[in-house]
View 1 (cartoon, rainbow, N blue to C red):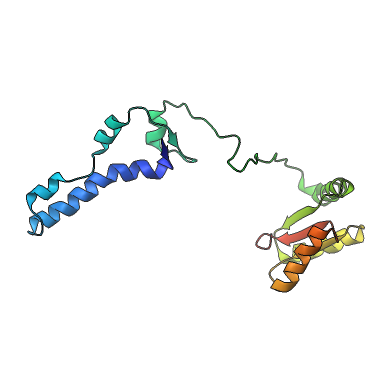
View 2 (view 1 turned 135 degrees about the horizontal axis):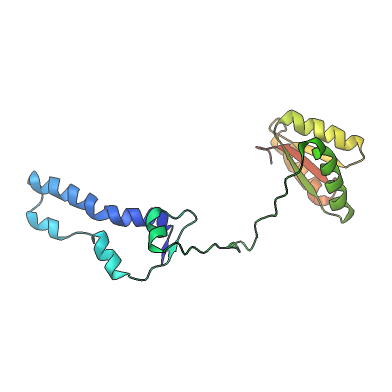
Amino acid sequence: MIDESHVTVPQIGGMYRGDRARKETLVEYGFRLPSALDNRPMKFEEFEALAPQTIYVSATPGAYELDKSGGEVVDQVVRPTGLLDPIIEVRPVATQVDDLLSEIRLRTAINERVLVTTLTKRMAEDLTEYLEEHGERVRYLHSDIDTVERMEIIRDLRLGEFDVLGGDQPAA
């Protein structure tokens, strides 16, 4: 089994050539005896012969691994964390704020919290104001808020002092 095979396979292939080039230079200039060339890492072909059945593990397999697998690739559906990929739903831009408000109300009705990311600090502030006007308990986070206040905001979210936390991408 070779983990991170997209990196490991090329390294195995390069070990012999890199070692050989270095030792040839040392032998050529008299810093090593020619017998130093005999003590070397395996050539890639020797490694392949040693491990005829190999499982290549990589999120981004290279051409070599894809060729060796004959196109038989297995996706890891359940992540080591136990979390599955979220379901992604694309909705029209025209109704995004109304959609958000209805989703917030669905979540808060069952006592859950909501995290909302915006593109800018200004958008986080404006969205917070809009949601407050519509009766939602909401706060925002962004880089202009000092560390102590950030910690208080996160604590209050956990304690249920408010239900919705908005912020720009870096703050989220």
